Each structure stands twice: as C-alpha cells, then as structure tokens.
Length: 240
Image (cartoon, rainbow, N blue to C red; front, side, top):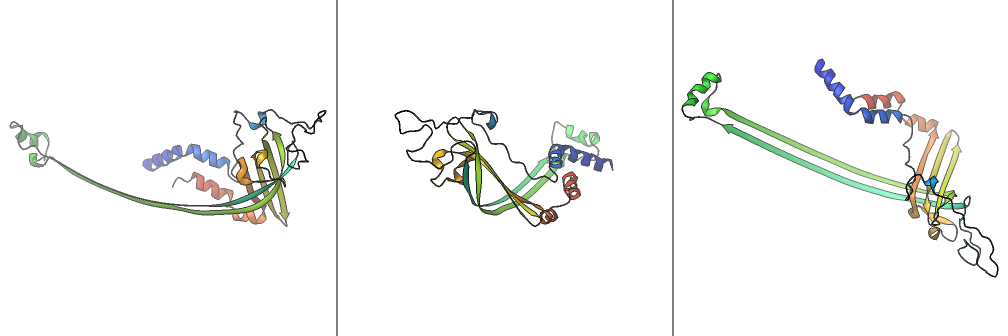
C-alpha cells in the first residue's frame, strides 16, 4: 500500500501544473492568444493614427485618400470591412519507430596470484570460473498517425478598431446567429494592409496578419455533446 501511495503521489506531483491549468479550463472553450504588437507590449498601446481628409488649397489631392476619386475602402476607425474566411486545411503525419537492444556481459577470475582459491571463502557459493554472467534485452515498437481535415467558408463584416502609425488597420468583428435554442458565435480579429483591401472593400483571411478566428456554438444540443464537468475532472485527476 505504501508503494502504491508513493507512486500515486509521484504521478500527481509530476502532472500538478498541467492538471491545475486544465482544471481552470473545465467547461470553458480554449482561449485565443492576444494579437502581438511588433513594437512590444499590447497592441492597444500603439498610438492611434487617423489621417485627416482636410482639403488643401489649390490641390485636388486629399491627405489620406488612395486616389483622386472617392475611395470606398475602409480607412478610419469605425469603418466597416468585409472579411472572407476560407479555410481548407489538411494534414497527415505517420511515424513508426522500432528499437532493439541486446547486451551480454561475462567475467571470471581463474588465476590471480593464487588468491582465486580464497574467493569462495570470501563470497559464499561463488565460482571463480564464472563470476559474472549477465544479459539484458529490450525492445520497443511505436507507431502513430495524424489525419485531419478542416473546411470553413464564411463571410463576416468587421470594424476598424485601430489605425497603426504605418497605416495598417486593426480590425475586429463579432457575429451571432440564434436559431431555436442554438447560438452560433463567430469572431475574428487581426491586422490588415490597406493595399490588400480590394475595390469592393473586401479582404481575404490569408491577407490578415495575427488573425484570430473563433467559430463555435452554444445551446442545448452543444451542451449535450460535451462531457459532464465531473467526467472532465476525473480525466484530469486520474493518473492512470
């Protein structure tokens, strides 16, 4: 019983940190990491830069404009931009490992200045002709594979939340659709270059830096598909 308790205590100590983190996330969806600021610190700390469209005397050009004609693309904080989310990812990994090792050791002491005859007296039952005869053999075979595919096709309208000093736009959008007792929740955020925004004020997911996408749902059906909190805690705490 003491050995079993010690092994259980050791297993619990080794997994304590990860278990605590997992327990804090019981019943919660995985959290997205914040958007990185290349200058360091949170992105919200970057000074907001809004180019003005003030008219300049004797000039047809307006500061902040992309052309002489009206530009319908998102430019300022609060402007709306359409985001096309198209994800078609697939990944396949296959690994196989085979390891075999065999050792054999033998030693004798049949002639050592006559002292070999005293060896059986010192070591009861020993035989000078065969002092050590050891062998070991290990074999390990492992195999693993990953085969996944993800496909998402969505269109979402987002807002410009920040204009960075270099002109890049920080966007953020959130969309919810409720049908009966199920709620579909979609959110997106990231950094967009003005040059990547098309003439119809649309940008593709592949052109969004630091993109963060969350697509999921809540409701009675989603709740039934999730394991109970007690089952999640049991899976975390059970070391075997």
